[in-house]
Length: 355
Length: 226
Image (tube, rainbow over all chains, first blue to last red; front, side, top):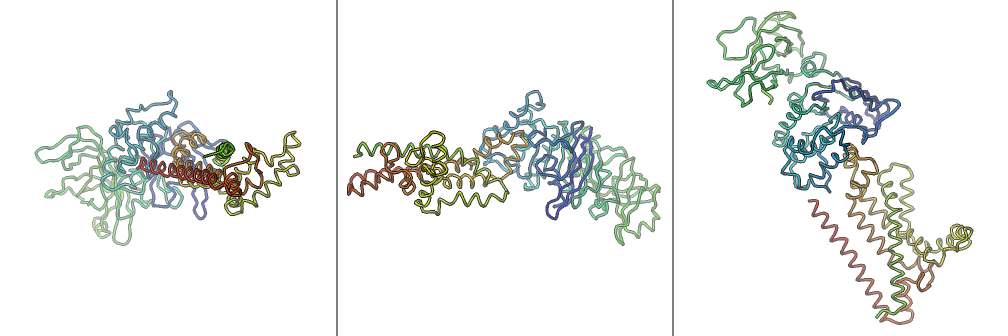
């Protein structure tokens, strides 16, 4: 099952010309700088934007091709806009019911109470939208979209209009959504940290075009894409909580290439977690260092090198099948004679646990 | 106190204002909706035509209506060929005149109200499965409620208060086309100031109460939204 999309449109000087296929499961980030056409693409997928030509297939249902084009209200999708856009004349409960009532009972997969519970908005039901905080409004908007039992959920920068604390309030709900609901999500964002935390797949956009589409781990570490070339280059590792080391206050998380020690986090054993490793926090040694304070050291194979400017080299390593980036100086790369296929050790000074 | 003929005139006036307002809502709502949504080139000419009664002397409007509704005019002649009577100097003629005369007072507040809703709420409703007609009645109309209230009251009050158009096309037929403003004029002409006071004062108070009602209601709606 996959989502296939192809769109072409012109707006004055702007041109959107995109084509991509991503799996119809998990969260797919549509990622790129502001003004690259992410929102326009999302609106086209919802049928809200007039396009010159378009094709959209969700699983085995064609929503748009040269013969027919479903109108927005005929597409079983949920759309959460940047500003939550709750109906000001309806209470929270009636906002939620608006889409729920218009969904045929046979098609409903999410019950009213399930959505209310999932987004934690029970206490807000009888209030008007005007008195809610930004984060609360956005949670209601997400629940409202979910209650139409959509085949596809579209989130257009749902966190951008929020302050940092509201963002932190919503992210756990989005993660729950990800874990508990089998529904493909297209998530438009220009914030790398949100994408790193949430996305399984990525559609990378620039100036109205798609540069690449695929699993986020791959796209973050491909040297032909801008993400792996810059000073903010990073890798994402999917891992799971293995055990807690109470004596030293650490949590051990396993991934196919080994075990990370990170600062103790109160997470259940076995819970899937995501680790983020910045290229500049990874250094390389030819032999395993003995007297070092760095806990996370893994044997690695050099996969490919990329010269990022005159002084820096970014090295893609393979650690048990997981790609990780290391940023070193060109001087070190020459001194260590680093070349593809070489076996060495990666020392990871710092790792962020995203959960 | 009000004489028998004055009460008839009051009744004629209220009937006229109510019919005109009802017809104005039926015509004006889709027209205002179209004007608020469209990017057509016809928008500016349409707006100009609708606004004409605001700037034209009522006698000019009344003059053209008289010709159009009369037996040799296009509308009156058409009615005659259908076996009816020409519309000049009839209640129906007055309703037609009032609808045209008060059109901007209904269309403009509605258009402003619809335009201020913006497209986003309607797009949200579409993504929640509401068809265009459904969105119009469940989102656009409730959100434009203050506009509807203003339109109803202005349309009604403006029709109650019209004089020039009525004088031109209505004549002064008791029970059919003799309305309050004409009755007041007659009383003043006859130097019957006492009767004129009753009617004029009554109209003043009625208008004030109507407007007071609108503004307080609009305020209440605004407060509820907060």
